[in-house]
Image (cartoon, rainbow, N blue to C red; front, side, top):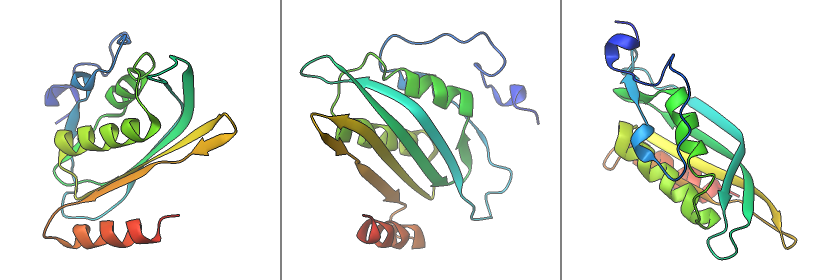
Length: 151
């Protein structure tokens, strides 16, 4: 089965950038190796959002790492989703947690972590980190271990 047969709408189409937070643009495809544990990592070095108080832009690198199960996020839809934060006002910590929760809801991964490396504002950098491991599995333990060791 090719990606078009899986019902992907955005792949190969002219890019339509959303004006505000748009989780509905996220799409998935079937993981051909659900029995294997392996990492998928995305870096978005040009992430932007808006400060909800001042309206000033905030810049960050967003890193997403996950161990897929049955479904995987399609990269163009992820790009469009992350771009949709460009005019969205939210604190750094909220952006990272929202991204993680939306991806958990979308694809139900075995494990996922999202880190935001936000550039300094007022002389302070903020690096929020959120993770999730499927409850009742070894991935829940992985989440606890990685969270405890996170610096």
